[in-house]
Amino acid sequence: MTSFLDNSLRTWSIAGAVAGGVFVALLALRLVLGRKLAILARTTSTSIDDLAAELLGRTRWYFIIALAVRAGGAFLTLPESVRDGIRQVAAIAILLQIAAWGNTLVTYWLAAWAARRQGDPLGESTLKAIGIAGKGLLWSVIFVLALRNVLDYDITALLTGLGIGGIAIALAVQNILGDLFAALSIVLDRPFEVGDTIAVDTFTGTVEHIGLKTTRVRAVTGEQVIFSNADLLKSRVRNLKRMQERRVLQTFGVTYDTPPDRVAAIPAMLQRCVESQALTRFERAHFARFAESWLELELAYYVKSAVYQDYMDTMQQVNLAVLRTFAAEQVQFAFPTRTIRETRGERGDERG
Image (tube, rainbow, N blue to C red; front, side, top):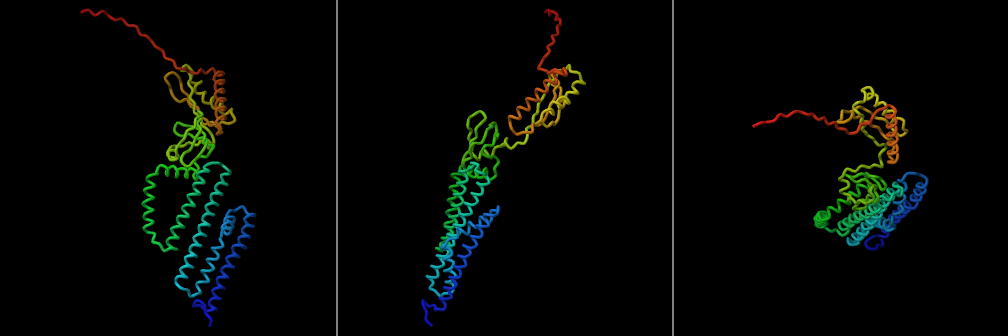
């Protein structure tokens, strides 16, 4: 029987049929299934079919050809050098295809994340940095796998060196890395967003920009306050924009000569003043304590709005209602007073 390169024509035919069958099958899977998934993706609201269609569309020709040649070569008796060459080429093609799929996954995730934010400019630079870091990590892994599986290189020493070098670099730039990871935490966990009003320590302002290293806040006094991301997350941040209502606690002082029955009626007066406003929710009113110069009462209520203008307007209306009620009921507000009594005494002469 006629042979070529130590393989019969029958063996070559079988190998060619297997390679051709694998090529046609993978190509049909890529084209037919990819087209159906693309049509399905346009008619559904889920994102899984979109991702599957995108991954099939990113399947490369060289990947299909390499798998077909590898499958057909398994039926042939080839020199060790040729077999190793086919194995190495197929491994490179597979690794490159994995890298292409990985890039697609990273890009798709970032695009989906940005779409959920509906164009919010929060962390655009951080988002790009995450994409670059993710793709850089992916290609680093592909490179190491290529060294190990294609070139048969012992990567133990390389990984050890990279580990030691990575530790040294991390120690040298730990502050920068801390801010970078803090930025990532802010973007993913979203304790606040661009446009939110936050209070940090003694500063209150609106978030203008969240970057890789710093967050910039426009203070209510006008200046821009810049926080490092790591320091910001270590602080107690109060997000004022996410309040559903604001609590008001006020104290009133009435004079000591107010009759006890009148003092007992004041909490009910205060409650009526609060409940007369549309945006209030009454909590309590009490005769709280005996102060130095007045009888002290406490009033607590909620303004059912997170808008600061509503809060101030409502508090003003409550205060005016209290003034009118106290004037009508002849309840006198107290102010600090002090009575000094002089005691006169006689002092005898001392004679020596």
